[in-house]
Image (cartoon, rainbow, N blue to C red):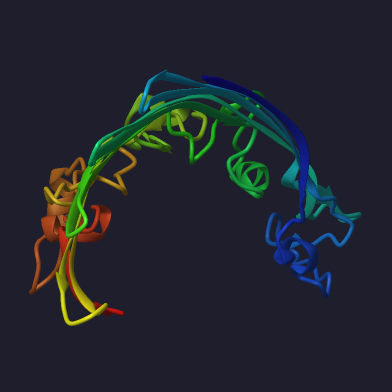
Length: 299
């Protein structure tokens, strides 16, 4: 047994309200690159999506799904640079940027008696000529070269792998779900005394470390009188207490790791912490293990 599917569609999305009405009084400061005006004449962002896929039953209870997809995104929100008669530059939201997304998705699902499981893998590339609507405006204000090619976007994540395995009976059940993903992009910046500091590097030029996590979900039902029953449930998020690095330093590419120079230590003044305490920020890491236990009654 097999199923072949194909889809094609055009989708539209209105820009956020701030891009329509920002600085609605149209007051332009005297300084260059000091404000950005909203534009009520913005057009909707347009996505053109293509997908083709195949689902194939390999044996009884075991299926394979493969899909290829591609998306063009036109009229992405951007910022045009306008110059007044007295040579003052400001920004105006407009539809100019472009992005695309393409990838491969492979999934396997299986059910054998009381056991079940699934594995899903996604390979994806996300590119665009700007990572956010004001990137072109900001780079011009900082005397940086414009971006003349497609770059990885901030949510570009090359590999994603999810897997679930479980066992269920009438009285109890449990499952484990694992998540793996290669890191998203960040902008690596060299130290100011490095020769590379003189080069206008493109944004999103490096990738964060990969992340891995496992969740557990289990329940046990206790029969009571008649049709009444009680269910004891347990949820454990981040079962192995993995310390995934979510926010990284722009010079090292790692969380809670910086290049510390002697001058940094000498300039630090504090009676209650050290310089390294400023670096070790728990918010840069994923949430620690979390356990939830609940008791429910059903009738």
